[in-house]
Length: 179
Image (cartoon, rainbow, N blue to C red; front, side, top):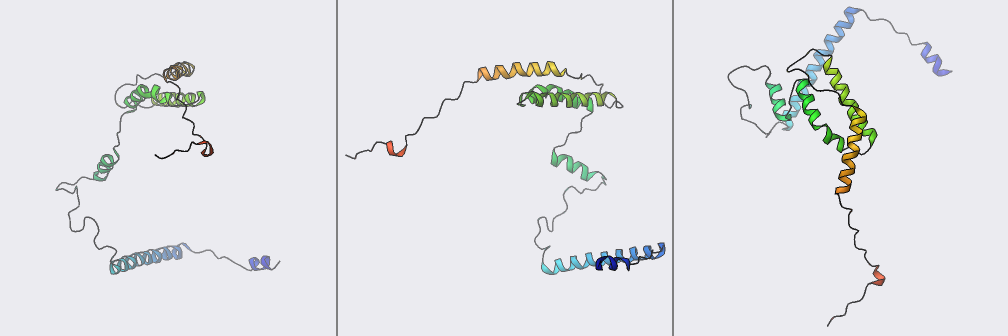
């Protein structure tokens, strides 16, 4: 009961827009001050001393202005390739059988083929970008049947592993005599 009585006595008064804006401006000024203070303390501690690249020009800054310099660096660093959907789907279609062979269950194969088909259909209904889309969706049941055949051929071609030689228990080991 005591907790309920405490909450009954709390009253919240609405803040005017002008007061709210003034408080926001004051908080921004304080944040800048706090950030500057943190930087000055880090400099005093020596946190910025001996950083890699200190005293060297920033790499990639030339005489011409390139607003997308960071994007180009990202593409180089991450080895990103941006292909039109039609070309990417052709590449994915060529590699689909290898991807299916990595699957261990029929449900996994079904899921991969259905995701591929969904991407093909999505690309069909988008505005064409780049070369025309010639990739066709795959028949799921036919893909599963081909996967089974390839899996059976792989299993038949792989010889069974030889059993590891059994070690004798230590109490049955023959004792060697020295000459």
